[in-house]
Length: 157
Image (cartoon, rainbow, N blue to C red; front, side):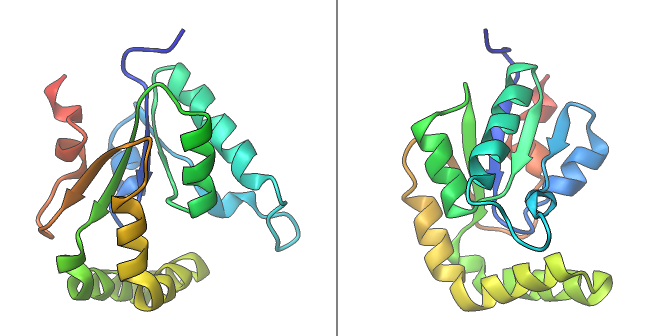
């Protein structure tokens, strides 16, 4: 039996998954970078990752996860009770890349470097893929002044 309030949120890099989880105890940021073993991801990492997300969703958590293609495909094949994709629209490309560049400059983390490089190289393709992903509610936002909790309607409870 699924909880009425559980949800899997596939969030594009930098949308605020970690920040949302930090400020809300009903939200878990299921960090995909933790799924490396000896520097590589196992071939089935996305299945394990999605199984954990679905199990947490069943317990009533809002589970924020990565937007990797293999993750989206797995969730489309075996969906959680509620699942949504959140992403900036293509109109935000330059501002979004600047945001990711600033984040990397601040943290100097490899995870943030990879996110920046991915956006610089593939932003338009990534967003088109998210816009066209079947099996999910989609929330595209077109302003940098947004509140992820509001987009997910978490402030209505």
